[in-house]
Length: 178
Image 1: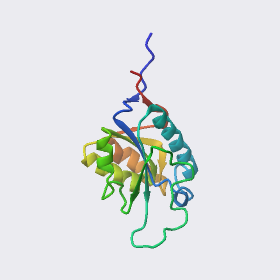
Image 2: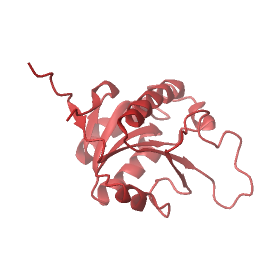
Image 3: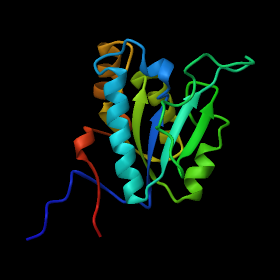
Image 4: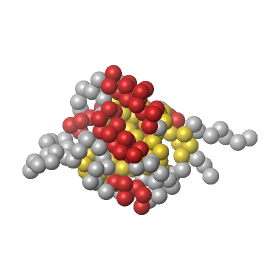
């Protein structure tokens, strides 16, 4: 008997995890419907699964343009970045504009992006919309992202994201076994 296929069985050679703005100063904010710590923990679990499968992990963080020193807590959350991960520094709301992210992903043969991070309706959605415009298949991990208010998060995951790709819980993200 064959084991059932996971609802979102992904090809690790063509899939990357994109985690947006998981920086201490952002994770610590009052967020809904999931706390920043809950989202960080779920994203760390997803990143471990992607690394174990040999799939790329992209960590996007923001820096404020035109300032000599970034605010405290502007680095990625402690321990999140691992050898082999792709760190992207953005200076706009989305992670693609003038960052070289598309070239790096295409250079690795990536066609599908799995998203998590903070804030659902801002950095995550802006990065995902650009990715969609570039032709990537999109998967949104609902419980691996959060926003400043629950209604903002809910609007993105129930109204916007289903039009751009697939929305799924972290438990359904798995890699196919060939």
